[in-house]
Image (tube, rainbow, N blue to C red; front, top):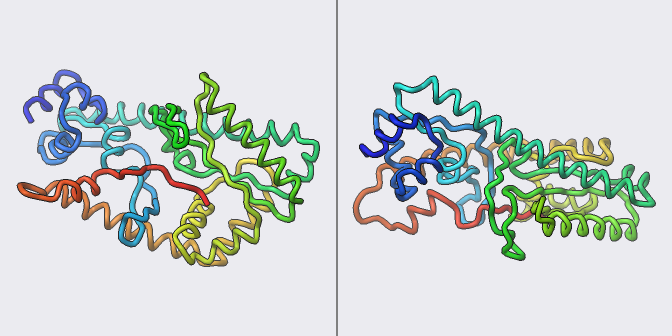
Length: 299
C-alpha cells in the first residue's frame, strides 16, 4: 500500500495500466488497494453501457468490465492532487474520443468507397442503410492490440461493427454487396498499416422485425445493437424506420430495465470484490472482476 502512495506522490496521477507497469502488482490486488485507501481517489472516464452476456444471470452486465475500466479508463491519484487528476482525465477522454472518431470515419470511408464504386450504387443507397455499433458509438473505443478471433493475429483495438439493413434489395445485389464488404474486411485486417477488424452482417427489414420480438438471446442482442447503432451511410429514411420500429416494439423500455439491472449488478459485484477475504471461490470472484469473453457478436 505504501508503494502505491509513494509512486503517486512521485509521479502524480496515473492510469490503472500505468500503475500495473510501475508496481508489477496483480491487477485485482491493485484495484482493491486503490478503492480502499483513504488517501487515494479514482476518476473514471467515459461511459458504462449495457452488454448482454449469456454467462450472467438475467443476461445484463455493464461494459467495460471492472478490470478493463480500471486499466484503460481510470485515473488514480491522491486526494491532495485533484487538479492534476482532472487534467489527466480530460487528456484521457480526449484520446478515447479521437480513437472513436477515427474508427467511425474509417468505417464510413470504407462503406462510401465500396458503394460508390458499385455499378448499382443508387439502388443500394436507396434500399440499404449502413449502421455502426459497438463501443465506438459510446466514444469508448480503444487501440490496445488484441487477437482477432478467426486468425489470432493482433488487431488495433476495438473492432468496427457494421449492420446493413436492406428493404427489398434484390438478392444478387445483396450477394455482390456482401462480397465487396468482405474484400474490404480482408484488406483492413491484412494491411500492416491498418490492422483493423470489421465485423458485419446484412439483413432485411423482415428479419429486423422478427428480432425485435425479443424472443431469445440472439434477438435481444440484435435489438440492443440496433437501438445503440448510429447512422453511417445509405438510406437515412430506412435508418429512421428501423429506429421507429424499436419504439413500436417497446425496446426502449425493455432495454432500460436491463440497463438498470446491469447497474445494480455492478454495484453488488464491486461490493463483493472489495469485501472478499480469506477462503473464497477465486474463479467465481474473478468472474465478477472481468469477463472471459469481451467481444459481442452481432446477429
